[in-house]
Image 1: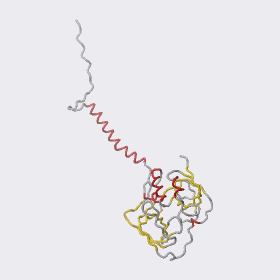
Image 2: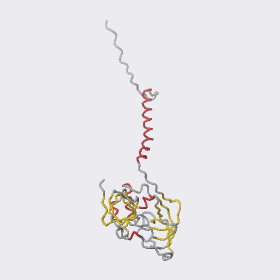
Image 3: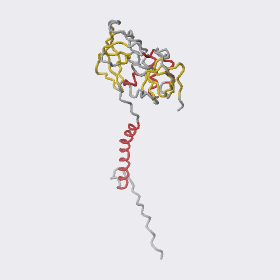
Image 4: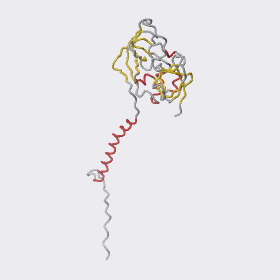
Length: 253
């Protein structure tokens, strides 16, 4: 007599049917996947945000118009020196230089204040000039004086308006095109240096003769690490460098 046939092997694999409740094992798996996706949705943006570099503490007060009175310093870079000794860089609206104001003239300017790390700038909306000869005569600005010794600096060429607060960030390769347009429009250039024995991290830049540097000499190097030869100007109202002609070199990454 033959033994009875063996029952078919039991298949304990759960099977999902859309109109029935999900089996427990599948429910637990779906819950874990949903939790993982939710965690990624929260944690990935946080991680990306934390990985971004600090854009700096620049401030641009677009909500208020500030009025400043003082005398224009006789320099390649437009600087207004106030009665209380503050030195305010002047720049125009948009990507433009400040309106031309006679050197040594008494002026009243109104505009939006831009500040960073002790530097002050005003985006000029209106400017009026009074008697140029009123008040004591001021010697020609010391950035025209002959500096003493050529030094080597490493850092990055910036446009002063964006870096001091008009943009965040106002430096690096993401800002390269914007900085080039600002410099072409006459915004004063800055050097942010990474190696400086004098304790300065920012320098205004002028040509070797103390005048404005043609933008075409700076724009090819904007946004890149560079080394340059320049002479610090003793006694300048703001740390200032006179660039040696042809003295900029791009550093290898």
